[in-house]
Length: 607
Image (tube, rainbow, N blue to C red):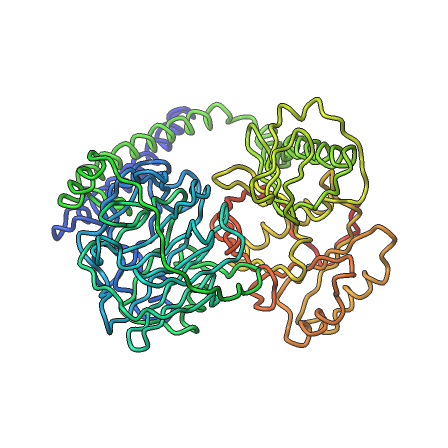
């Protein structure tokens, strides 16, 4: 047998194995899709039920779905099995959530989910993010339930346009949570009504924001709404932003249970870590004043049609025929890829030197051109401030897309330099990148962005966070490989980015170094203008945490990164499967360079 024939037979055997395995998978999946008359795939349970907390009677994860596609319907993961019908809602282009346009997009159930009448208790909770604030003093409701008295919703979990704060409202009373962070960040809002005491409470990111009394709770017989409310018989308060992980409970959750839900941090869980802000002070109650905006007749008809004839679930289910078609396409792709690979392998045979060179080649270095473009834009900002006598307030967050850069400043100020537009609340300064190309740029000193690190991409663009703004330890939890990828990428940013100050790194192994000796030595050896980066390869003990609080005050030029869960951390993030989540940032998709070297026990100084 010739060498060519032997190779062809070998390749044919491999292809046969691939086809047989693919056909087996096709048969199993097709049987699962058609078997037992199931109309939709199983819905993952909420993190509340997974963690021993009360089981929600209504739970909608709102994702994942085909990015940017219409969200026609969503199955219920709670005990009540109340599916949602979608009206002009789409799946978020980047993160796992549903996106609402603020004018006619909403989800509705076919009927009520919780009892809101006198003597009945309930809890409503959701993760929400406003893209913009509604104009003209209007409110935006994330979750409500139609069918209350006077044509109103029986409750509103919302951003209140009159008070300009988060709110949990009933028809006669409402309570507020005013933390000052409303757009561009995720917040976990939880409204609790206790039918026995007649008290309503609002929690923001697991922290009690305020309480009020509702002496005349209204019963309701309408559907649960996500993305809008009902006011005086009209659909109103359309939500301009994103929502996910909506949960309804037929009881009043305790403060500890609310906090536990907000503190759950896991892949696909129903909650994220609390935001790193002080607990908002309770606000005085005021009469609710949701602002109505009448829907179009077509939109109302579309809602009624979808509610009566829900489409197949978008939460991962497909009919048997659709699944078979897609799997057949997948088999064809596998066969074509195998043929191409076999042909390429045959062409390369007889060239051992080339194969060896390919295996030993180093991974391609990351493209840093974007980093230098960001550096120029930031220096253009500080230069403009310096030239115009404006004290630069510092950067907390930087978001960059293909056309513009937005800087969330540390201290709000509506006085921005020429070429930069300040938001109405003074929290964000933005500029078009094309207009900064001719701006004057020089080093104004002060290392204004020394703690800035690239996190990854959100639905709004590339995101950079100033780790120095944490004012304390930062922890990254999740699978070890994911945590290592994220933290090591941050170390590279803090020690090698064009805007970083001289940074030196010490690694602490908590179990073998109880006295934090390496960190202490590094701090004692710092020169003027240098900063220290203390990396805990494992979470510190209680005694080490106490030592950190005593030793690393705000005056010490050091940042602390902790790999693993650390309740004492000021900022707590979770990395898993390419997603970086928190309670105070948009969800970030990160991509660490492949083949990055593993850290040793001692890291040399930075620049």
